[in-house]
Length: 403
Image 1: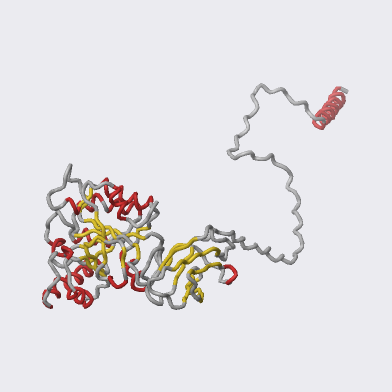
Image 2: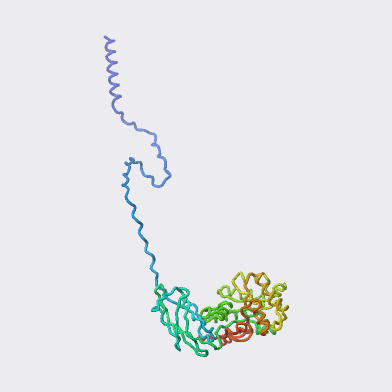
């Protein structure tokens, strides 16, 4: 009996244990802290979500043609005259040379877009050798007659119109073109007074700056000397109120007091230097390295005889050295093209001119005080100079322009 009860009791306990195993157990309170989640070092990581189903791709369609970008509309630009042949006041233009007007933009060649006249009346035939250049071929011009060209209207291809009418006078057989060529030898500070024999050829650094300021204030345009030569010999246009700057002898202080001022303002100049000075080792004058640097900077170099000698009566052998050798040496050692000559001491003769022409020079400058230049005087061009301490009004009185 006892065995049966024990057996029954055992079966009951086994059944109860099975029921307890099948039922869920309550969570036991844990005294251990919960595990700290790991930090994810990426910005704003989204919580894990179910992976979405793939987005269906659209069916292929024809690629549309790219939209054509319209070209920008050309805005009208005011028309200005940049250069002309002749310049205003030139009373000795080349016979038969066309009048030339160079504008700041391509121009409308329609005759209706242009309004100009010449008085006294001349027959005019217009052509456009370049989009911005008008050439006017005239009937015969009477020497000694002053003509006046007036431009009332001109239209650019941009649609812009001439900003304001302009006019200039010209003629043939007169005193020439108003092109002042300024001559400098020394730009240096000698103190209260310059040494004897130097003062009339020198300017203080401040005076030099004031003289350039005067040119700018009078709306003058400083041009290269060779441009003036092209104007006088070929009818090449120049800007209004042209002026030229030249230096003789190659005095060293010019590098300190004049050249930086010219470079700062973007002004051209021509330097006439005897080769003997450059190779002498005398630190008062430019050396060859100085001349190379000037040429590399865009300045022009000219002949002044090999030894700064009188050249009015040279023998053929002397001319070969003083004119031929000096031109070749400057060109070979600096790379500059030497086309203009300044007469040392201002002395020359017809024989000198022939010798210069023989060696390929195109023009020569004197020390004669003139501002009007003539085509027939291309080897006798005049210059003006200022002395040490001269007031600025002295230069103003020599220039051909009013305010």
